[in-house]
Image (tube, rainbow, N blue to C red; front, side, top):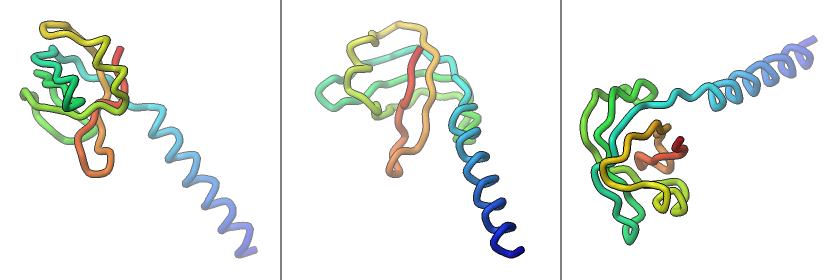
Length: 94
């Protein structure tokens, strides 16, 4: 019986984690600067709900350097930011 409960709890935790990763919200922002050499982008963004941050302008790392080729100063974007290895990182852009 205890084994069945442990298995059920492990399953529910894994489903909850996967659902959280899928349900990330996009935030609107405006690209202020792209620094390809440093693999960073400066974005003036709305509130980042998942990071509990108010609207501001800040510098982010990018998950994939290829993202930088799609971004230019003045561009309106929707993006997902998260902490990756303790650093604020843009993990998705549309």
